Image (tube, rainbow, N blue to C red):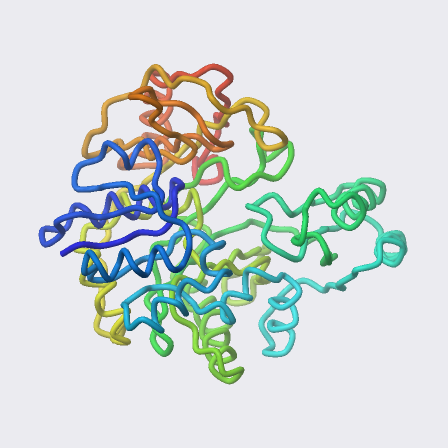
Length: 425
């Protein structure tokens, strides 16, 4: 069979890599792909971007099903276009994808359906937003309402920092349409975790738990990024807490979307803040919803899958996820992002990647911001690579990942040296 993965980042490389290993797969096309997917076995890049181009390609190549990786095509209605053409695709509709494309929509949805989340207010007027921040005090969180590539959230330690974020988002237009409104919410304390499920409109299949590292620097310092590394499983999510998340967050979200006339299909990512206390009563609130898998959580999760993932997607697009099951490698998977110079503010591009470790069964370098330029691998974005390993423990996974990174080189590269620190005794 032939498959199509839409997107060009590390998440899409990892999805295509796992799908391409299935015995029935002839080719996984990736649109547009990156330097890593350009040279991978059974994977082929295709330079397509618009809904019309993607639909025509899927029809011509008789694509068995399509998987949407990033948020932008979902917000642009690619799922609606494929379904209108009678094509099988895994992802939410444009209307359902508002859970991610509008933070204000998501917060109102959660309040309406009694899903636990931080208290908030939405503003379009900078003066009103600044006054609200002054009244609430700090720390406080300022979010651009729309899609901002993982960089539209400022966790402000001071009132001044929060008001500067408002001025940037609402005032100078640097966030474009994404910053036309801001959501300002209370700053929650605790431990973050990523809880990702597959949905078919009625049924839900939970994927392995994971934990991302959003801050740029060691010790969770520095600015927020799209993610500097992740590992799976996340010890903070015990079996008891897993059941609570399904009962208090995932199932009410599915039921709420159905009641709102928007039955949810595709990946659903709940970013959670988990407070201290016994599992039965630990404070549990949703920080955000994403209508896709997380990046870099996808890379460790794909490394741990032992099943034929094509069978799971086939059941998902047929509305039969209740029949699906995934076999997981019991080992830990850990991925460290290697980012470009000056990421996340103004990442430098065009640097030559002149050294990479060889991929093995237990260590894979997933590409994100790369391209092949006349046979030369170069950087094209902020997060360039995600070096991902499998090992018997988080500590051993750390050692293996950083050993592989020592074999990785491009000018200006930066990475955290403590990915997985919460899970190391």
